[in-house]
Amino acid sequence: MRIGILALQGAFAEHSAMLSSLGVRPCLVRTPQGLAGLDGLIMPGGESTSMRRLAGHSGLLEPLREFGMSRPVWGVCAGLILLAARVEGEEPFTGLMDMTVARNAYGRQRDSFVAELQVSGLPGGFFAGVFIRAPRVVEAGPGVEVLAHSGGAPAALRQGRLLATAFHPELTKDDRMHRYFLNLCGSREALPESL
Ligand code: GLN
Image (cartoon, rainbow, N blue to C red; front, side):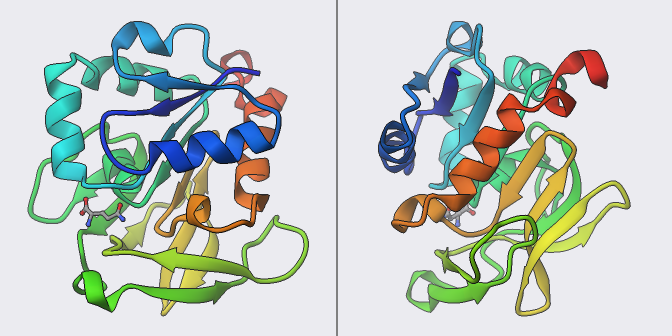
């Protein structure tokens, strides 16, 4: 399996390490050509304004949107913002996932927190959700399954082959969310033929 990680800015090295520890060779994506042949893509956390600017300069916006229309994509924190169809106060980026997000709605950097999350579909009890200047999902469309809540807002969501988490699993030692995504990437329902 070939899994890409958008590596323009942010926490791509941590995802890379997590995938390597699971025996999957990560492919760092910085150009449209980097998306070729991938079975799935992680858009990491970081700073979404910088990422969208860099992605624009690299000609990645359209290729990312197209990739997400037929292949699994997991957006983490800033990556979740890049997936959202609606972003309060700004234009959406890929617009792939039917949800509305408010950036930085949990407060400032020092208001970062860890919450115990019950994530549906994950075996083995609570997941420690690390929230760092996280976006808050204020509305999710009917085709979006909410896998976990935190403080009354969706914190993990899935829309078919698209996965989004407002928290950062790559900053923990818990690889269950990464395993979940790898399952999605390997499953037949994620493939374009069955859309
Ligand atoms: N605050 C960042 C943004 O709005 C997201 C933070 C993160 O990815 N940890 O882009």
